[in-house]
Image (tube, rainbow, N blue to C red; front, top):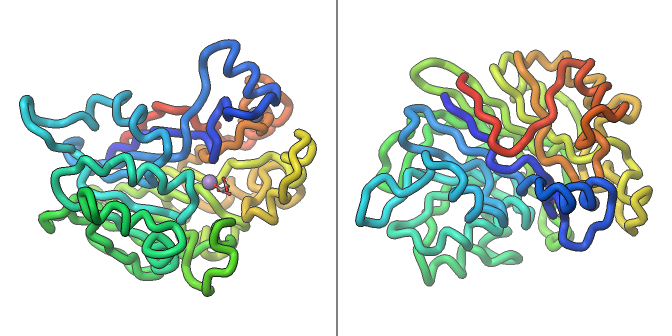
Amino acid sequence: MRVIILGSAAGGGVPQWNCGCPNCRAARERGVGSLQSSVAVSADGARWILLNASPDLRAQLAAHPVLWPPRQDSRGTPIGAVVLTDGEIDHTLGLLLLREATSRLVVYAAAGVTALLGAEWPVYRILSAYAGVDVRTLPDGRAVQMADAAGEALGIACTAVPVARRPPRYARAAAAGAFDVGLRLRDERTGATLAYIPTAGAIDTAVRSVASGADLLLFDGTFWSDGELRDAGVEAPTAREMGHLPIGDPGGSVEVLPNVGSKRIVLVHINNTNPILREGSAERLRVEAAGIEVGEDGMEFEL
Ligand code: MLT
Ligand code: MN
Ligand code: ZN
């Protein structure tokens, strides 16, 4: 199974358009940054599954030749399906950028997210006037064989497990349901396993069930500390209020992740204020000392 990190940043990216924090300033000065949260995965190297569709999707597809149209002189895509881990803007806006598709977009999501995208954030209704959507709801905790629009199997089974978090800000009043999920993706031929949990408010039994025994865990690295946004001068909720377990606080992921039973751990969905983005910072060194890697755009893995 091949895995590519298309974007390692949380919502806003690095630099974020209106942010003057040290990380965003450095990214502007050096002309380097990171795109918003998304991953591509493939069992055969030819047909790919997108995990989340970021607002930077156009640049992300342009950057990776394996995601280019496979045939000359005709339209087409190696992307067989999209799987969403939540209904946030940073994970779903890219669906609208796929509107030129020549067949219906296959989108897998948990029940709560499927409902949101059909109502409060009407992506599916808008897309119905363009490529259309083949809406597929992921059941809680049961493996599903991923398949493309024609029903052809993509060689990967996906199990979605609801994780602790709250519905998106635009849908505070939404009925309770499964919004945020961790994904366990298993190559049906080789058994190689990716655990993908870009957002989680806790490392609990749900997270452990997704991560345990995985060859690679891509995990929520949004914030180092609970008050990080406020410390950066932004009037904002805390990390925990937003449903992100801080990495460095007592009981945070740098302490707990090493014993969830994943062979390799890489942080993704990293907010632009996070000090782990600075090479050599004390926070970065603590993460590395724990055997955890800091995700970057373009990182590739062969599982
Ligand atoms: C999140 O992951 O917490 C959201 O994407 C934050 C946001 O509203 O941008
Ligand atoms: Mn997000
Ligand atoms: Zn910033």
